[in-house]
Image 1: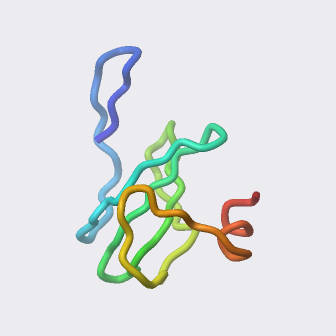
Image 2: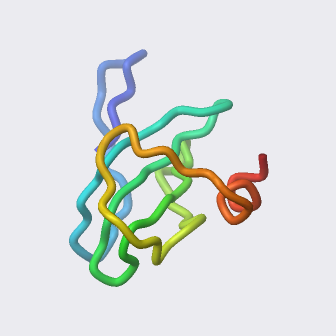
Length: 83
């Protein structure tokens, strides 16, 4: 769910249709990025649309164990995040 802090209201987001283990939600350059794990995707990075709640996967299938504060870098990450 998404909390609108201006109006103190909650809004339900679209269903992800599978189990999701979120690791972190990061705000960067006005965008919201969700880092997490799903059985079908392994580790992934998604971009969340703040207005509609739609989620687009930017990177998936990444190996390793992620925890809060995980640092992502490299050409694939830069390209996916358009840095």
